[in-house]
Structure formats: structure tokens, C-alpha cells
Image 1 (cartoon, rainbow, N blue to C red):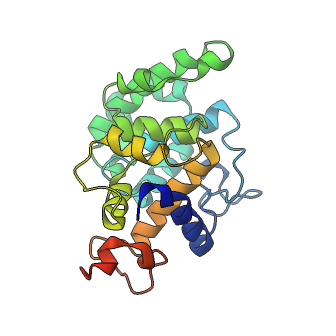
Image 2 (image 1 turned 180 degrees about the vertical axis):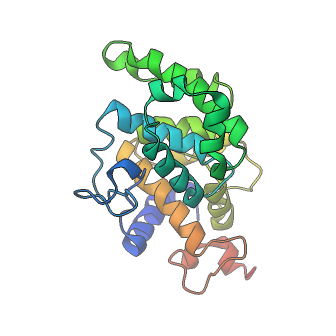
Length: 241
């Protein structure tokens, strides 16, 4: 399989799993088109408000080195405590915030990251019009924000076409034979985006589908027998299973 086959991969995954509805908004869980976990499948109109953008950005920071299940618990607790706005996060003490987000792991570091990001977010929201959108360089300049987190924020909170490269994407790309496995973040991102239309909706759905695929079949110990990508997968056809 080559990079030119990525749209085929996307269509196969979409046909197999359906729309994923990322990024979930816990604050809207169970309302309207949102399921009980806050996923909004097939609806790319969210986020619509400053508060929703901030919730997604917080989630992108909190999910570093942990599972979404843990993050979901933390966000629900933040909602209960009235801490889902940048001003509220800026006002609470670092120590108290750390205890509230404890279930996300590395909570002292993440509390500091959230405080720094909240200050940055408030400054961005004071800017007029499109200037309220951060650029990638500004996010990467913040302490604790790496490429994956920055691109998650840009893609899901601001609807900008930045493809997120995470561990699942690396694993799938290597097993499909698209890469050797040692490529840097920006190199792998360029390879993916250079083979796809530059569309926010496509990037958002494709990344979410890759995560679903990796959790369902392309695990560390893969379950290839029923995988929808097995016919074009180098790992499977080479008999490495």
C-alpha cells in the first residue's frame, strides 16, 4: 500500500465503523444530536462557542499520557465545579486544580499546563475576528504543548486542517507499509496530508477512525482476521501475525 491509497483506507474505515463524532463535548452529552458521552456523529458544526472550544482544548491537554475514559471523568468533575471556562481555571489555585484533575494522571504538571493555556486562551479571545485563532507556532511555544496536542486543538477546537499524528497513526501507517516507522512527527504528517484533500471534516473523521481501528483491530498484538484493512496491509500479507 502507498500513500496514494489513503482515501481508500478512509472509505473502508468509514464503511466499517461509521462516523465517530469527534471531539466529544461532555457538557452537551445526551442533548440533541449528542450521545451520552458527548459525541456528535456526522455533525461538524461544533464547536460553536468559545466555551466549547475551550472544553475541547482542555481535553486535548488532559488526554496526554492517559485514556479518554479518565479524561471524561475529570471533565465531568470540572463541569460540576464550574471550571469549564478559562477565567475559572485562571482564578483557581494550582494546588486545588491539581486535586480536581488528579484522575488524569501527572496532575500537577497538567494543572500548570491548563493554567498557562487558559491565560493564552483569554488573550486570544480578546483579539478581533479571525485573529482569535492561534497559529501552530504560538501553541508550540506554550509550556507542555507538543505537536500532537497543538494539532488536536487546531483541528478539533478551531476546525483548521491539521492532521493529528498519534501513536495509533504511527502504528497503522507502519503496518500498512506507508512508512518505515522511524519518521519524525512533521515528516509523517506531511506524508499523510500530501495524499489527502486539505479538508477539516476529512482530517477530523479520519483521525478518529484510525483511533477506532487501532483499538479494535490494529492493537499492539493485532487482531487481523476480521480487520477491514487486511487485504492491503503489508503486515498481514507478509504473514507477521
